[in-house]
Image 1 (tube, rainbow, N blue to C red):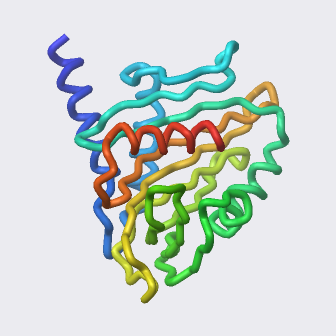
Image 2 (cartoon, rainbow, N blue to C red):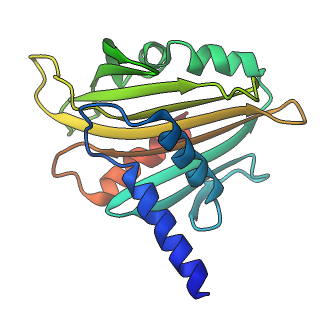
Amino acid sequence: MAEESIVQESADNNLFDFGLEPLPTPPTTSSVLALVSEIIDSVPDSWKLSKSSPNYSTAVYHKVLGTEPWFVRRSVHSHPFEWFKRALYHDHFENVVKYYDVVKSASLKEEREAWRGYTLKYKLPSPFADRDIAEWLLTHIPEDNEHEFIIVAVPADIPLPEDAITRGVYSFFHRVRKTENNDVEWIIGQTVRFESVMARWQRKSVLMRSCRAI
């Protein structure tokens, strides 16, 4: 039991490292991909179930890591894998602008090896003011599995547009893979801080709505 506790504490600390501090340069690709795998492997064992469909084809879990509320959603779909690849993997943030009214624009600012730096404008529902967010984005297809892809975004410490008022910070990942039954498993993890007086329950509410809407 003591060994299990130490292992779990170590995992929680590592997960918290995948957090909300803006980075001037992107992290190493291998470390981030290993961390995403660690997060996914920890669900649902050490996470609390927030919501699920009757047959568990969709389930949302939550957990506080450090001081940040994280939500992970797992869902299974009958859509073709290539549909997800077009909608998520290719031109990810550009497609987010098309699909979600809350995201008004996405601008590519720089590229560093496998990572791309973006700034995004979010128009939040009342009573919250709009936010500008800067992200390092990674898109990855494993060499040994062409029917899987991973998307990761972490906060970037890059200049925001001149008209930016408040910086928000956001971390997320997607893992999409084709199953042996030719379904598609889609796992999303995310945490956000809007850098305001938003209470924890409000932040959790925003994350929960986001997980349900995707």
